[in-house]
Every structure is written in structure tokens, then in C-alpha cells.
Length: 559
Image (cartoon, rainbow, N blue to C red; front, side):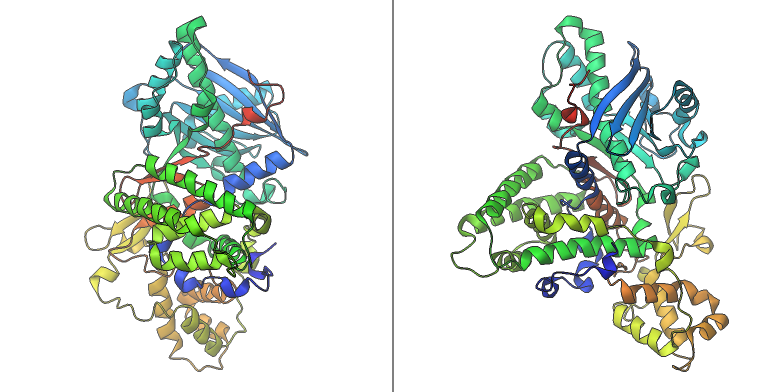
């Protein structure tokens, strides 16, 4: 289903927030994971379809080196995470993309690997970018141990003790991934090869499955090493402590441009979430079950906010506001919903718009969706996109029509003065060494001649000026024949005509622009929690924290 043609509930259409409100960086940079997030979508599917999980291969030695296979069996297909554990000296452990060695490396295999497949992968997967995988592999990834927590957990379990909860809560994961590659990178299967599979058709399902199985590996290898060290005295992780551990992730600037480069996909993600919120707000009442679910979700959100730590000044301020907001929300719902009140969810939302910060308002969205799965979960099916079909340029459109559409959808652009240095201070480019997106300072660094077309606001203003010199009844094709440099932006204007949430409505080359706002928005759709920026270009998060493990769904128990 295409979200652009999504037929909203008629009564909900009036409650949808406009793009001018939703698509601003400050709000996008306050996004929270919801039940529509991709990892939640994966977990719903594997539970509803009765997938089974096991570990048919565990060839890890006493030093923690070797290989393992985690098998996920669904109704139609089987997928296998092939994991390689390494002995990495502390001085070689790095979160940077230029690292060349890791504590563990992984590939998600399409089917069940043979011994020959495992040997082939063992020769390539530990090399990551320097190796090559095949179309039988869906993802390629790597992870490093948390130096602080991994050793502590092994030491305590080996002695028959559980880890210190203060240590567990301070970190929240045993290992963190530093890259999860898919969609054809380094020889892996292209997205088009798997897009028609129901279990992988939604965005990033192969990547989410890979990370979820990796989470199981992080616990398994820690327990393995604890038993090697402690023998009969060693114990396994307590189930409650284990549930509180996610998979960490360290993500850099390479993620930020994705939302700009995939406008239709961005629209569909945003529209699905906005339609979900509108459906909840439009309800005439709030059932006792939904109210109870909301209160439970709020309690969990308050607990998470207390455990959520950051050393970044901006995020520290946001966290303080969030904790205050959730406390205010708890006070507000003590008498909510009022007896005989009409549209209580909408009333609660309107209260939040005036009483809460952006951080609190976006958290409120997640809380309102949580107990209303019957209304909103189906929208996860319309979060993908056929971008090839959407990007076809309509040359028959007149200059007047395109100009009018540009004024309607890019009105926020027309007042920006690009002669002011602060409005053109940044430029996006691709590094020669790693072919990764980077952000430069136009007035201090070389490379602006290699600028990528992510300066959408400036490109839109340039197109607006160029169109003004042409008669309105001329076909766009004639204009673009004379000015091919505007093809890229003309196509985006046409896209926005059909996909209203396709554009970030901020200047992405401004001096004060924060790339972490783009990153947080995308990560929230993944389902990431504990967003912890280390700069405006680098962030750590946690995935699957508080959620079940594959071993929880194994009818035969776990090794």
C-alpha cells in the first residue's frame, strides 16, 4: 500500500498535523519510537506468525573466538545470522567507521548455510568492507563490546552472582554495532531482490532481524565466557536483567542524509505516523482498557527517562524537559478522561501542545499510540515506497503549475537570504576514503566544489527565480531543456505535490543546523531508545531494550 494514496478514516483527516508543523528539524529531532517503529513491526510479525528460533552451530572456544549460527524459521523461509567472534585487543576497539577490527562480525544469510558457506563467510565477513559477500547475504555488520559492562558481567556471572544493576542501567547493552549494511552493499542482496517477500517488504526488516539475533549472541557469548571462567559456580543472567539489555549502536553522520535522499519513503513514514495519531485523536471515547494501557506506557516512559543519560548539553536539556513533561502528564491524567468528555484523546493532545516541550509532545504521540494498536498497527504496511515510479518527471506540466506548487509547498524557503554567510555555512560531500557522507564548513574547508545536492532550500529558491523569467504556459520540458541544472529540484517539487511530508522544511546548510536531528528522526522510526549524542554528528542509541529475545520464542528451550 502506498501511503500517498492511503485512504484515511474520514473522521480522522481533520486531525492530521500539517507538514509545516511536523517537518521541522527541531520537532524531528525530538522524535520518539512508537509501536509503528520497524523493530516493533518485526516482533509483531514473528509472534503472530509463530516463527521459531534456534542456534544450530556454536563453535566458540574458551577464548571466545569462533563462529555461531542463529536460525530464524518463518512460515515460508528461513534466515540465519552467521556470527564470528574475535579476540580483539582493547587498543584496537573503536566505534569509528575507519576501524579495521571488531569484537564480532555478522552476516544475515538467506536460508541455512552449509559448511562451505560458513567457510566462505569466515574468509570475508571479519574483513567487512575489505571482504566481499554474495547475494545470499542480506546484511553485513559488526559490533564491539562495552568495555565497561561486558567484563563486569562475565566476572560476576563466573562467581555465581548477578551484575550490579547500577552498572547495567548506566550502559544498557553488552555490545554495540558500529555498522549494519544492507541493500546491496559490498555484494549483498539488493533491496529489489527481497522487497516482494511479505516478511521483508516493510522498511529495514532484514536489518532489524540481524540486530535482534545479534542481541541474542551478545548474551550467549557473555554467558559462555562466564562458564569458561567459573565452571560449575557460574550462573546465567537473570531474566529481568537480561530483558533490560539492548543492542547498542554507534552511528555517525553517514545516516543523516538518508531522509533527504529518499523523499517518498520519508513521506510514507511520516504520513503513517501522522495518520495513526489522527485516528487516535478522532475517537469519541477512550475505553477503560486503552486508558489503563496509556497509564502503563506512561509509567514505563518515566522509568526509561530516569535511566536515559547523556553527556551532550542539548540532550541534557531535553532530558530535563522530558522528565518534567512526563511528571506533568502524570498529574494531568489523574482525572482524565473526564466523565462524558467528547474526544478525550484529542483534548489530551491539545493540552500537550500548550503544556509540554517539543520533546514531551513527541513522547506523548508514542504514548497515545501504544494502547491503540487495533487502530494503528495496519499502517505499518504502507511505510515502504516504489521510489522509481515516484521519481518520473512530468515534462508536460506547465511552468505556471510548477511555480504555483513551489510557492505552495516551499513557502518556507522564499524568505531565506542566501547572501548571508550563516545561511550557507555548511556543505555536504562524500568522503573519498570511505565513500561516506560528510559535512564541511564552506568558509574554512576545501571541497565545496564537490557539494552534494542536499541544500534543498537553496535549490528551491534558485528554481523559483529561474521559473519567474519564463512564460507560464510553456511546458516544463522546454524550460528544463534550457536549464537542465534544475531537473533535480523540479522533480522534488512534483514529488511534494503528491507526497506532502516528503521534505524537511529547514535549511540543511545553515550554520545552526544540527545533523543529529535528522539522525534521531530516522533512528526513532527504527525503534531506537536512549538517544545519546556525543557531538552534533555522532550518536549512541540502544535497540530492542526491554523487549523479548529470540530464545524467549524457542519451544525447545535454549542451549
